[in-house]
Every structure is written in structure tokens, then in C-alpha cells.
Amino acid sequence: MTTLTEGATPLTVAAESAITPGAMLLNVGGALVLVLLLIVAGAWLFRRSGFQLRGLQKQTRLTIKESHSLGGRERLLLVEIADQRLLLGVTASQITHLASLEKPQQENVPESGVATTDFRTLLAGMLKGRKS
Image 1: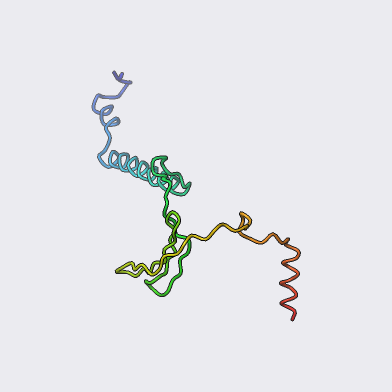
Image 2: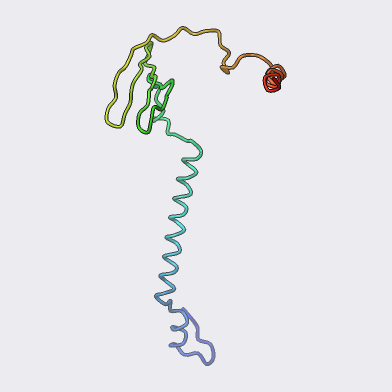
């Protein structure tokens, strides 16, 4: 309960503690904007971190090995399924099976996929080719 000070009437105390509609709207609106910004920032961080739910990570047997654009909406895809590779023609309106290929045997290629020559040898070869 509020106590009255000298010279204060109950009307002046009530008028000082009353919140105007504009101030209340500003409070609620500001809180709403803050919550929405937190949701958007959380979604951005979630997407940026690459976090995926454990149930959504499936081991897929279908992988796209190569893709080559032929025009604005046309492309060739080399798709690997189990022990087969399929060459597919993809347009905006259809997908056409062009060829079936056997999966190539694994060769002795380093895991990085690059030949095992050192940087000095590669740089020297590039500089020689540039000078001639």
C-alpha cells in the first residue's frame, strides 16, 4: 500500500503510477521485436553451424559424382548407385537415362586425390612453362 507524503493527494499518486497506452504499447512491441530477433539469430546460427538432427543423417547409397552444365537449364549428371554409375541428362521438364556404366575399380590414388609431388617441384615446373 502506498503512503501519502505531505501535500500529496490520492489523485496525484494515482496519476504518477498510471501507465499511458503509448508506453505500454512501446514496452510490448519492443519485447516482441526482441524475441523475434532472437529467433532469427538462433535460426541463422543453427543453419550456419551445419548442425543436423541425428535422425536426418541417413547413409545414402545415391551420390552425384560429376555434374556438367550444358546450358541454362540443361546438365549432365554422373550418379553412383551401389555398384553402378548412371549418366543422366537433366532438363527443366524431364530426366533422361543416357547410359549405364560399371563402377570403376579403386586405383592406387592417394586419399587427397593429388599426385604426391612436392610443392617445390610443381612450382619449378610451372615457372619453366611460363618462361618458354
